[in-house]
Length: 180
Image 1 (spheres, one colour):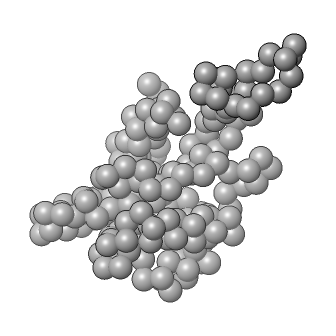
Image 2 (spheres, helix red, strand yellow; image 1 turned 180 degrees about the vertical axis):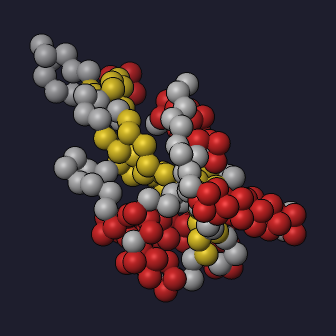
């Protein structure tokens, strides 16, 4: 495992401390706080694709379980995934040639909210949940912030990047990728 050291300014360090204290205070006052968080991130991966084993002498046949095999794609792509304490809520692969810019990420947020409405209807109806995502420019863009504000989505403050505050990058995503 490789950690990249980031030099944070004193102001960024203060922001990290304040954000962590806010999270601790909220968790102390609400025992269900961590069950209300929907978190997401992007990661590079090689998706697994299904390939049909067909005997060339007999021509094409209907696919059956024993005729299917899985193989790793040769194309590296970006996976966008959101989950809560119960598991994955939404995942999608970014189409080849597309980048995760503000416009694309806003569409991801639309699909995420639709998915939450379907798979976590109680949480969606109550509105008693929080979104935790990175502070990268596409996530903090005005159109994304306006969209989330209009939909009354509470976004948790994500302090300046540090590996100790981004365990998903180091520990979770390798396990998620292996299952996908």
